[in-house]
Length: 241
Length: 241
DNA sequence: CCGATCCTTCGGCGGCGGCCGAAGCGTCGC
DNA sequence: GCGACGCTTCGGCCGCCGCCGAAGGATCGG
Image (cartoon, rainbow over all chains, first blue to last red):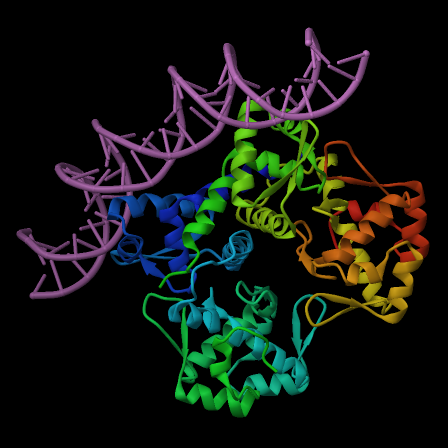
């Protein structure tokens, strides 16, 4: 037998393979829910067209829809979808090494962005490395596991570790970073951490984008509480000390 | 800006999204090189059709082609492709939980198979777990790292650890297993281990399939040298002790 | 050399699917 | 209630792409 799921993977891939749907999924990769109309305009198609796409993607389990009044909010169906799309980006960057010059927007995107509901980019990778170096986080059975000191560190920053731990989804998975090719923190703990960082004014979302900005508060935070003093260096290629 | 690579991921996904190409890629997931004609017959299409598909996938970097005399051997372009397809299988199994009864063929496939050039399936994740439990393998910076005793263990089984380490590709990555949702050993070390196990008669490939069979030699090997006595249990769902 | 084998290119056919405008349905605000 | 708004369904158009058979290199065996 060949792989048992061949037709299924073809179906999913074909859905992602349409440029318009790919654009929609790219928009949804920030983890936010969008109304069908927003998606239509962000993807550059008419409302009926977008509606059809959403219906197909819903049926296939790529996105989920929540009806609220006369609005229908669309979001990625789950972490598996986000990881799948991240994989596609990784493949694309390997298959077609970027020739074009790196724009400032792309540099910022590589530095810090959301990956579904957690932090990604060089900042995310360096953050994990720093936590591991301080023995606040360890690589465990599957994914990560905070140490006792680490649990305190997370709690002090407003992350409800206990709540994350009993979440139905994986607690602290590792997720391969598209731009860095190194693991960052995903799972319930990763999501809670990103929420806390945004809530604490450390990171700021942009409208309609996945890119995240480090605030003034954030620069102090990463310098003093994580040990990453020179965030500017994160935008430049190369290995950080 | 939306994700910078949206059109690129759409292109790759669209290629995988064709059922015939998906079937071809599924065949190639065993890591073996196939002639165009073999691919055509395994995918159930005529030679010209297969040729066109191969040309497109080559241009996109999904497969690579090596000309040898009048044969053209097609293989997956690299580990990124295999990991991408594995992700698609993971998504598919989450989105459409298998309703159909589990066939013997599928049970064997879940138990042991190739994932591109390394071992996957329940046997693979249990093998990694056993090596970690014996402190022969540890989770490291990115992926795995054998301990000193582990290096000896690998070498004694015919794995050239030093050679794998200076291979251009990643040394010992972790790769998320489709059926088990746990990591198994990939990268140059994983590839070398699979090669050594097949060479040593522990595992046997099937013709035209990814499924691997554990030989009589293999049952002794896993019982005595790994500490997995009851391989039959691997075919049954549930957690092994 | 000459047939056999492998593979490709070409031309033409057919169908799937994305796209839009118009029209229909449900929900909210006044 | 009655518009306004968000969304969906419907119908029709159009282009893309997968498919095959036939024909044209390319390479091997004798």
